[in-house]
Image (cartoon, rainbow, N blue to C red; front, side):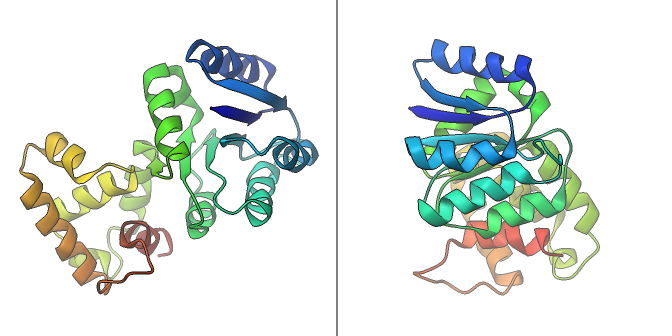
Length: 214
């Protein structure tokens, strides 16, 4: 894959470049500040962008906003966002743009090279990946809010794994249940969140947004 990296920490930026190179991917450009992100993405039109949320000069949300702007020009551009901390607003804003693969990982997760590469591939293929810690904290914050309080403990667990981007088979393996049982839980979640079958919307993403927006 052709990758653009936006990360202000030189050690992490160089580390990501070496990791990706070792796995056969090409980093076509690595930038260190917010104003450089959009030009790099539009110039190279990579297969995926790996972007830090907070970049110079203000260290607020330059990276995220540049990535979202790039997706306006390049609909469907896969974006894997890195963040130092769990920030609900950024996770919600990223997922709200459903025009391609998206991911939100804490930087600590990059130290597990296998998980990072797996997340990169899943996002590049159009999937959704949420850091388990992000999911855990967001679910904990919103567990007492309607309609989430109508979900059973198992359904909240399934929703959390859905938010991580796990397939039904992967969820079944994690919970030691059958795929049929997982499918039943997911249908119950959709029903309780008021999400009827639709040809236009990805209900898995909408279910995640349902609790991010609370």
